[in-house]
Length: 296
Image (cartoon, rainbow, N blue to C red; front, side, top):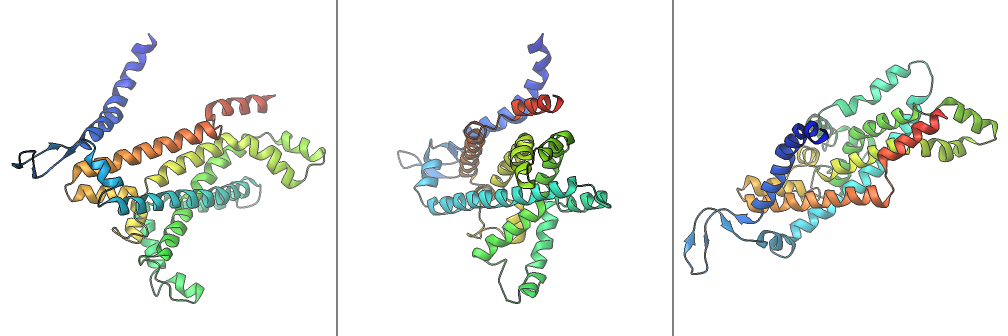
């Protein structure tokens, strides 16, 4: 009976998740266009090339572009997620406090997250223009949207500004589940504000915080639209793995694009596995234990 009831959901998942993954993996083993066979004759259409698309990515003429995009993707993931976690937790702690106008503060903090990424990219591109607000504030002429480290910094600033409220929202939900009596008991026992935050608040919001960080890591690893709109495509300083896959697909090299997408899929799956296993992110189990402890 359980299998019968779950079969519609499993069927939908197989169609919308399983089939595209398998189709992309198969496509990565082929190459489209004209080529020469073993006898030197021209062959048109799809040709089975095996792992040639992957070997050319790691060791061929596209190796430099791949490793540059891989480094950029990892760098953006580490820096933005770390900054967003710190800022998001601070936002949640502020929104948790009882003060006049708290509803207005919560609504204003969530505004950047509600703005579409393409629109926020255009807004920040206007800010980072040569005669924009950013250069006017710092008093120097910096080419933020040119190819170089300032472009990386511009993408990080725009990304952190937009998605920090997402972590703040999830952490706020975790904070609201903590009973007030727990903090009052810690205060009576003589715990300072920092001790209450480290030994009481952080352990109890760990499930919500881990979910937020995991979601953001998976999202940043697939980053495309913000650097593409803010800086532009084919810029080495902000080029990501998703951009490489898109560039190959737009040039009708679908086999190579599928190979890039497959590598990115494997990278994301590995990061998620390490995050859950090595960091002890037993999200469901810890959430249940937190609710039981709160009830007691």
